[in-house]
Image (cartoon, rainbow, N blue to C red; front, top):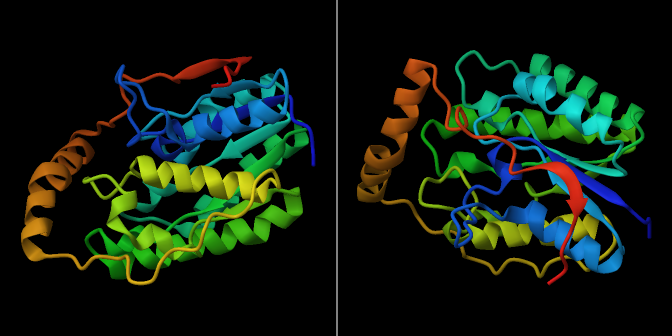
Length: 251
């Protein structure tokens, strides 16, 4: 097993931990869980989380990558592109070419990079016929480019557990606490420091109901569309939750 002395997390709300709130109003998420578990094995591990909700790939690359590479971390978890895939005019080939260059930048800085094949969110969102091909294209590109950069790939798309609404928030976009825990389990297994999570039980996915869809649209889709129309983002007033490499307290 490799010994890592520093972990940096780069990305958007998925990496920030949105959906897994702590009592003080901040978010924990899979990144904090992974850092805690690694720190229990690697004395002196330092951890930073630069991820900010709502960020698209180009802004992640511009704002977070220079900071991350400047920290010279051993291990970087990098997730981006989900917010891009929700926009009109999405071009998977163009996006993933830029994604590839970003991963190359991290690898050239000496980091071991962890990438993700995302779960299929199209089963819970409008226009699944439009969204699913985008998710599949991004995941296939991640699998292809990972080998060029010697990156780990955490395959969440292949895990049927993520079809269970219990792993997601009511907004259908963000993982809930149980979802973040399962992502952490997958990462630790991919890194070779823990066994693979238990297989999902059959028949966990719940059928969507029209009244649920209507309630969701009023509560979550409407506000999201208003932000898009006004050029706003959920992360406009948010900074990185852990901008410095600091030691991890082991519970």
